[in-house]
Length: 464
Image (cartoon, rainbow, N blue to C red):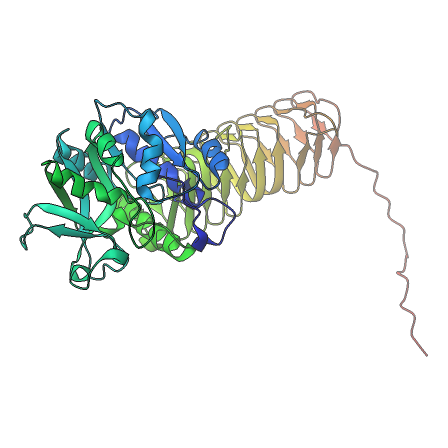
């Protein structure tokens, strides 16, 4: 169900598209449905329906195959029962309908599998939780005081009696129900209640009346059923999510300087003996090889870092669609920037305030200070001087610079592409190179130095 407006979010963005862990809340829910081998997912939209439906087409699963999506519109929004009624034409009677909420992102697949097993195609299965303060939630009413007693009803908080409000077991909003039974029960709903809405929870009393067993799968992890209704709640769940990811990484052997200061906004895979310092952000798909060290305050997105590489503090790597690759034993940073298409070979050094874009650097190449390499092919053991740049753009098109093996580029040089610097060559500092140079040559292209003897600087005028 993804039709709600989310007024308390105080945002023009539909609530289910707000992001947690780098993905929309709804994307988490759809991924969870896919992970339990759902035949299809029917997304019930309402507020911002066109935006939500378009966004669903851009979701990409973090693992496994995507689930087939269909959409049902709920306009106007007349309650949870009315919402599910809109999806009925798209549901096959030979299956089990699993009802999920688009703003509840942290339900685990194992929990849903257990709920589906409880349903077994025959029973109405409810996911429940005991809460110290159940205010606002629907209460689970059982036939007796025992935890194993038959569930008789769900009573919404606004409709509950004083005695019923003392009940601490609440309905999470998640259920599994045989579709053939759900179809008949939804047809019997009415809106004779405090909110004037069609409650999905009323199907419990219909199941009881029809002699269908109603079972509850009770969990203790409140975060799995916590919904997002405000920026405060979103931030709280973000920290829960990041905490779980941090624990999982540490259980795999990753050393985190401070688990509370880690943000994974995508997929992060790590080899043995990886070390990650504080305040690092990982986005998209990131792979860290064995023994990689990530310094403090780095941002890494869509990149692969090979074994033994060191990413020094304050480095920004973002591969976007082209990706970035950092070779074994490479040293990057601090304060370096690797942009899409950067491919660094083994033992490459990229130093402070160096930017690399769509360029390949072979083994042992170095650009240690204040430099730019764009659309370049750099050979082995090249030394690229401070302040040097490849001028790759002529105002209309990009051109490539080739720097062959063992070249030395002096400081403050401009290599105007397209140009090739021959193997073993040297470019003198301050040169602007516009033509290709032969191998093993010294190339200097700069204005002649002029010195004027006995020259004096102008003196400042004094006010009288």
